[in-house]
Length: 246
Image: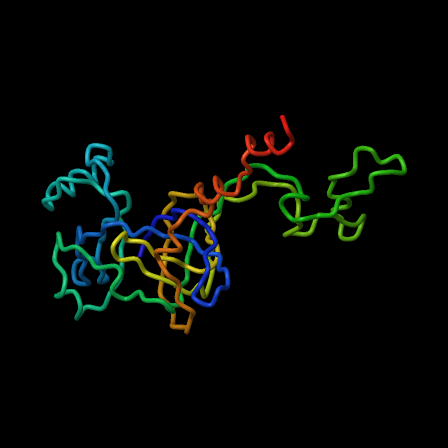
């Protein structure tokens, strides 16, 4: 399924241990098309995720959705390959229940596009140490150093770690357990961090099951900084002045 990465924060489980979690928001999903093997060569569901003004979509997709009877557009349109005997369970326009197979303890595989950092040097891109800061080498602090030998082999070996474009690639994180599922607000609490910025679509797949310590959704949704607690902890300046006799 495709979800929206909303936030990363730390929460406390029922045993008092803090957990780093990522909040994923469930987008509404509808079946917008069905592909069958006789006509298309494979069996799949064409699913539309999220909401978007149909006028802002590309013209081929816009006309295709209007013929299918949709008055709204979708942020994402993806295919899900399924078995032929399960195609009869779906029809165009049917909403999908994405939280049915998710529960605390589900092991997931999450893929997202990492943040793009542009053209980066070897220190930032690969974690190189850099050159010395003294002995007359004032301009070698972040230099890569030697990139190959001399006459033999007389070339730079393929795959050499060098400066270049950093980030902006699809990264997959394996075996992230689900700590809680908030069906009321449509949120999934996944342990660990997920690549990419906030409000980006990520792909989640369930790959197994694991026993985890549950968390309380009410306490986990509270902000980390409580303004009331801060106000109580502030000293009363007027009382301090009175104590000093001012």
